[in-house]
Amino acid sequence: MVQAAIDHAVSRFATARRVTVLTGAGVSAASGVPTFRGDAGLWRQFRPEELATAAAFARDPALVWEWYDWRRTLIAACPPNRAHHVLADWSTRRPGVTLITQNVDGLHERAGTARLTCLHGSIWTLRCWRACGTPDWTNYDVPLSPCPPRCPSCGGLARPGVVWFGETLDPADLTLATEACVCDVFMVVGTSAVVHPAAGLADIARAHGAYLIEINPETTPVSDAVDVSIRGAAEIVLEAFDRWPLERPTVA
Ligand SMILES: NC(=O)c1ccc[n+]([C@@H]2O[C@H](COP(=O)([O-])OP(=O)(O)OC[C@H]3O[C@@H](n4cnc5c(N)ncnc54)[C@H](O)[C@@H]3O)[C@@H](O)[C@H]2O)c1
Ligand SMILES: [Zn+2]
Image 1 (cartoon, rainbow, N blue to C red):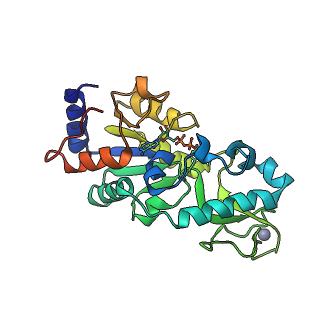
Image 2 (cartoon, rainbow, N blue to C red):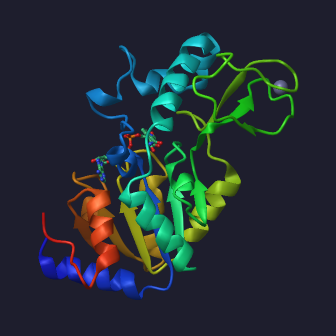
């Protein structure tokens, strides 16, 4: 990627009226939250795909809750990083900036982000597994006690309020995310864009004429389809976007 293309991307971003940012696990990597891919994403001998499903929960809720309790405890000790803070700052200063995240860690919320849609729910939300009708509730206890936790209304098992593999997204969240694709600049940050609808949202934004920017240290399936793909860590590149024109994001 040539420097001129990156400079062009930053100026498009700086002058855009509506900017939508889609984030993934990479945005939280610098906070110490492991992504799912690679050895760091493994817990004991399990892959996330084997634990984050309704079938796994039905089979062994204690095991699945042990994994979530471990992740909640790990995440509770992870502060938001520069990427979360820069994005939160844009969302509060620029009314046209909207965020969509696939993360469940709550770090965008802790940084004070406005206009945030959490497509995959939150690890801090609990839900009645029996669906007895009680509304989802928030629980920040680490470690959980008891674990597995129970529904305060019917006393049955609680489940994590996240979207598991094989489950559909909340239609209201999907509508918000789709509407946010009508924008001038669409940024895809820290996501491998293999889990839908991440890649799909970028396509919708492009169909609406948005200028697409990707920020990721690695090549992803959307890299070839964006206008500019900046190879770098979110916490560094977003900071440079924020300081432009005093500083410029540079070619990796
Ligand atoms: N923090 C969280 O809430 C969390 C953690 C793990 C997984 N998940 C969720 O599970 C699903 C798939 O997980 P996944 O781990 O494959 O996430 P992902 O698909 O979002 O992949 C992580 C991406 O982040 C990139 N990355 C790594 N460090 C980065 C950095 N410093 N700056 C920018 N990009 C960086 C990697 O190259 C990779 O493309 C998604 O829904 C994801 O959001 C959430
Ligand atoms: Zn219940």
